[in-house]
Length: 254
Ligand SMILES: [Zn+2]
Image 1 (spheres, rainbow, N blue to C red):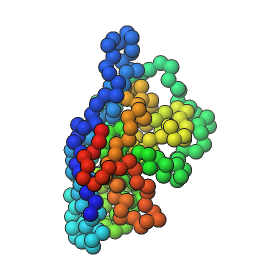
Image 2 (image 1 turned 180 degrees about the vertical axis):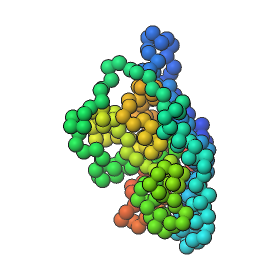
Image 3 (image 1 turned 120 degrees about the vertical axis):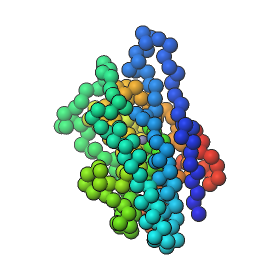
Image 4 (image 1 turned 180 degrees about the horizontal axis):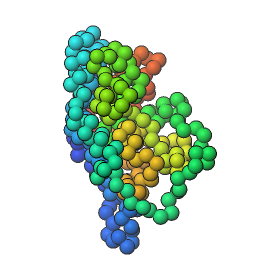
């Protein structure tokens, strides 16, 4: 039985950098004041618990219970959180123009390889684990979601539009984020990549941390956690590596 304790939502809400003493000495746009564009809502963590219990039910052969729990995790409040980050009129992703940042590159000027290799993905998972390095929410890889889709197509909604996708699995979709965006000259080196949720990744898009006033997530160590991204439902050959871990009954460390 794999247990995962609900983390305190505010546990990681801290500012890696102190607020500037004066705007003149340090312009606001260059002074990171928040770790993510919007703090996650409690429903995401509740959904993670439901999905974790669904994984246990699945492994125990309790199909009906697994279906019920997966459906329970498909919560409208999570869609509202995601949409609040992606929307065109959202107050959460307002940007400030910052001088001297790398310009947007034409496609021909960017590095040809956009996605990190499989080996690099494994390296990032081993380092970062299965939590967003920005907002801290628990994450699930596409491979796990697809396995759930195949097992429970009646519970895992996954259409071609945002609105037709299971809200928790959409928000908790594990992606690999270029901190300096690929479109701004960011490389595929480990030092420029982090594990991130799809909402944070998609909302940041081709913009720099400084344009959002975001703290650099690479300066905060990955959060040890017992959350395994539901990798336990995959066959051994397809499982991702374990990330920073704590003992089963330990509290999440910040
Ligand atoms: Zn996130």
